[in-house]
Image: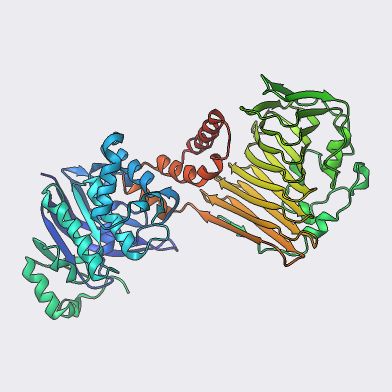
Length: 257
Length: 380
């Protein structure tokens, strides 16, 4: 059983002028395969920083703490090594890559993650089915990665990747944002399929509770001011739905303006 | 430090070029200073005297090698040939006057070549001048590859006549050694219903400046001009085009793509299309795209379209210079793809459409490999 352990993680963002601005003030979190965790918090609380720094985005600098996946030091790995070790980040704003077709991209990624090219005989069928399950026309395979995709199409494409790449730990950064109700259902169903395999631990980062109606978390963490301020079960999401974040914000301050 | 510029389209430049001074005598053209519109992007000092000399003693001409030629195609060396390209600047006049002989490639009328003819031109390493003339007879269909390799300081003119109803695919490859310098002029003259597909590849050389121009002599002429270039640190690769639509009902399509990487990698693309008053029914489009892979490289891109008649089928141009940026790299790497592989993926995709125009499988593979080797070399 895979386990991601985040211990006292402190992270700063590198500003264009070279200065470091502290965002994460010591985060402790353990995610095991088969578990679904929701991280909820107001805008600017550092939720996305947690996601991107674990994935290794160069914009962030780790100033303290540790992240391990099955005991291996994640922070010592390059971005691609982290992915090959079993980490996956579904991005809030997936990047357009002109000139690279979706089909080519997915095959290259699958080959990199598995360490061997997928079998030609079964791959195209697997790809088509994965796209159809997310309501994406297989014709998207010939389009350039995320280029000209709507917001919803980009998110579906992220979940197609999640299903195909079968990571040990998946971090979904605001995957629900910008989705209409139909797309939210389709995307949530994809996340649930991955969860139900029991082989992937899911860290669902969200501002709103609405995706939690479709993807039931085992644990809910309230994230304010760059740290986890309260933890509980699914009932915590319900109380947040009713009360919002105000009571946490008093005194805690926001990590980002 | 990085720079990438897209200079806004200019007007009234193409016509001036079409009416520029023409002479066979290099002395009729004033010495270049670098302030001329045509030369303002070119680092003249790196031309090793080609910009200023009056036809000084030249070394041996580049060696032309070829194997078996398709039926109907012949290659010979002749003392002179009626010029197709009337020199219109100092260096084209220099090449005309100083080239002692002309390499003549003739394709017989109505020949239909199954395989492309392949010519390998080896630079002699010293100052040299060359003229190549390609004459494709009426209704012939053929493909020709001219690859230039080795060391060189070369001014050369390539003159191409495609007669009525004939069709030519021409691939020219500047695959010089690292320190080579080339100033080349390519001229296409298209007869009635003649078609040329040109793929111009520039990879190697310290400074390569290629000027390609097209004239139509009858209705129905069609020119597809594709270009692929890849500039490494310190390289200057410059492409200029002038498509002169002077007769009705002709077509042109220009699509050049370039990649740049490394400190002071430099590319220039200036595409001029002129639709003269008589050229009703013209259909033309030109596009240049550049992919800047690292900081410190600079791509200039200037499309010019000048239209003197409103009765055209289509006339358009576009230019875009984009960066392969950290976010794209992060996205691909976050899917497990190593950095070098990520760059290859992007560059291969960027050039795929152009490479598909290359008629020989083996050559297409070799060019793909050459481009990818560049990425590996840079340790990208």
